[in-house]
Length: 282
Image (cartoon, rainbow, N blue to C red):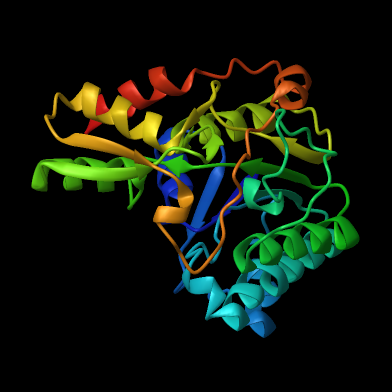
């Protein structure tokens, strides 16, 4: 029986993968930060060795984008050095690695959907730490699959959708940024894409993009959430300049999904259909 080990067991993707693999013929190991402390890089390979996985789905990361600016040491340890240890383990033991990365490896200056070979140039610590992790994977385990994704939300965990629902219930009026463009990713859809890759028994290493289909701003996303929830809150569209944050965000990070769609014959749902499904679950 093949073994799959998932890092970030309690994260949005990890939680969705647990549901997806509930009745699977694989032996699954879901490791949280207690079972696999990514800040203790000297023990990571030993812990992985206890499970002897055939596949590692590496979804765990330091994802506090603004906090990363003041906690860069821990961001680089988790997103780069720990990822390097996992990649080295995969190289030594022949495990296949699917690692999750981010649209924040781009600077946001593009005006057309970003392909996998577009120039990378992160504008914040989080994005740079994730890019260093990608580079470590390519150095040590070039046979890996890296999936860049964006604006992830889920039935599980904390995310933009749940924050908007809470704020719109509490307030008569909120303001949301309207000049950052991309597409959200329902973590269950990303999990199903990963499931499809493993099930296909066809391993095509490299970098892939995955998000839901469509193009929108955070403001458009908030309006859709409001409409689906039937709430009355007034939403004001504001430019990024009116909402300063410690970390800069890319203005445009819409991902081109053609490569993963063709390689693995994936049907990628539209963002609004997936949002409706997730909110129905709530």
